[in-house]
Image (cartoon, rainbow, N blue to C red):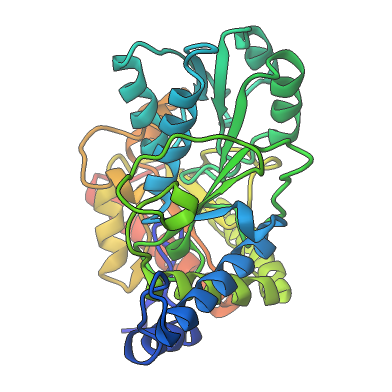
Length: 386
């Protein structure tokens, strides 16, 4: 049975050239970058080459890229490290109700430390209203964190307007953007959005798992979460994960060279969305105009259990998800869809399809047929659909 993988927002297949680069590091260039001998010097060069590749992908300088164990750690560090560093200036911090769990959990953790948190609502499309942010910002605000592309519904937040408001009304505050689902696929508006901190993850870009990065704008002071070593300019202690870092750098280079594939992915996403909407009783969770086309969250009238549909599709070789992989094994519904005001089938029956630059038109066409037939099978089992 042919496999069609449409769960690229959860993770992506590692590219062959990335695997080769990682193997070379493990078998040949295996030195510790902190060592003084030749092996160490060679590893240090690879470290800086990867740092430059990732910086180039988002339009930053390599001195502004700090490696982490993944997107979760980078988000934790951005939120906790920035808030703690600025607590003497104010203990009010702001985020949205639809952030990744690694951001929301960090804000909840800080609430227990005495920080005051504002969770901005979103509309039915999953968009933040900048007017709500304008009302929330105060002289006591130290941090604002808003993701660029939502991992469940693909909504693109107006980060340029948000960043401008932050710097106009609360210039003492830092602006953090989770760009895990955006980097390498849409332009990253570092300067336009006045971003201070930005999160990246290797395994969402056809790189390895267990490696991420935090962009820290030059001049921004941060408290470290890890201590006991001088790595990453004394901000993130611990021997560097060199295979992961080199793999991440290789993946970043591949994404930077794949402009045509990215354009093709956008076209395929729009094609898939239209194919799904042709199925009677299909609806989109999210925005049709302010969302990336490579993340599609849909629900079908008559389908009340998204996880059941996911397994039925898997039996036919199509891999999708019900939402964030980080919470996929929990019974409670998506916090993102709840914040958007979704109810019943739109909340409990939704599935997410997410494409990569390596999916094909043939896969999109076949997936549309599989989903249509499987939804009919589900409806028939439940007693029909009219």
